[in-house]
Image (tube, rainbow, N blue to C red; front, side, top):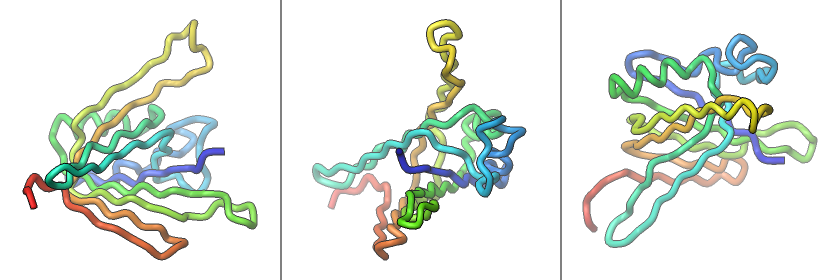
Length: 159
């Protein structure tokens, strides 16, 4: 089974955008007890590469259509500055879920928001999703269980 990812999303203008996003009102019977104020992330992709200097690519994640969907549209329209924290959970030896990793993005903005509504005949079991791409000023990654962390700044300077 894949690890679970939850996003806490705060905007400079709108406040806690993720508030109530994993509630029954927001995502129906897929609601997540204990994660009501976080966005359930279905997939996340990120890349950092190097030629002369470090180059960051946008973080791209897929989420279900939920309470945050209209708020994300407002955030991209207003170029709102956001702070994001992705928490990764895995199954512990005891069988419970444990927070083991996190990615924090500061001073981020949405650069693309793409709703995806599946074909109602060909993909009758699929649900509406959104693909969100963000750029950020800096990123912090932490492995909580192993006690390591790393930090990088999205900067265009050549070193």
